[in-house]
Length: 386
Ligand code: SF4
Figure: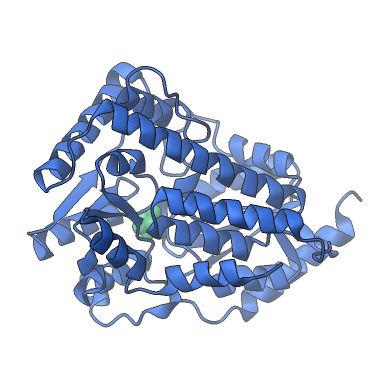
């Protein structure tokens, strides 16, 4: 298969000057609104003529010069690189930033943003942990309504139901392709390496949904047509814990080279946060809220009823045919690491082998992880089914 699409995608997301966003603004005159992990109402932004821009930190390509001064040393890396991007002018192209409720770190970052960039839109996007439509639903509807008013006050189109319905349809189409991509990975991971899927999905955060849909279609068609990629004797693993700060691309490739087929993961999770189609009948804002309440994935940043933590992970392992689990969380990621004992207990109870390690988005050395993952993969191949 020609790798040019994947190479272009990688070049796009690794360019921290965000040229695709600048081009879109020149062509449309619209507002570009950044958002942090894990979920943002991209459909609403799109319906108001804005470009939602996923900001997942600076990764391995950014030297932190001033960002460290804003945070203590014992927290994750993504807030430092994100504030660094803002301070060095890389995010000047954005007209605003959304900080979805994931943890105190993101909440604090939203406060810093408001102080440092008073002229820009900066919203802490609170999301409900009560999933009763009359309580959490009413709350989220109000949050989204306020956000839409903020956007309109800054020059975005007012929110109208027909436009939102159109945007929901476009994102439904996009999500369906993302589901197909992941289904292909689970079925034939040698055809869709995790590192390629990651680059495509990450680049998709920086372009309009219509362009992302074209990219996904082109990639899927190329995968279907490619008969050269053949299965190798690798272990099938599910990787979990990397839903916010993303591991370096080099780490994903290292895991693949160490003998693992990553058949499922938590990378670039905004694409999968809402599992299925958002209904296109009835009030579209209510439909989006309802999808958030009732059709979101399980996540460390989402409340689960007592005793149910880990059940979804075990189910994913079964569905994807994974032989083992890699718990792969960002260092100091409280939500991931506080969940881990419960999810580990669930996979142990289900008899699923696992191993765990941590990373930072700017790690450059992977030898220790390579040895650990390689040994884990060998053990899976030797002992699975024994
Ligand atoms: S990596 Fe974890 S702790 Fe850090 S900002 Fe993201 S969710 Fe919060």
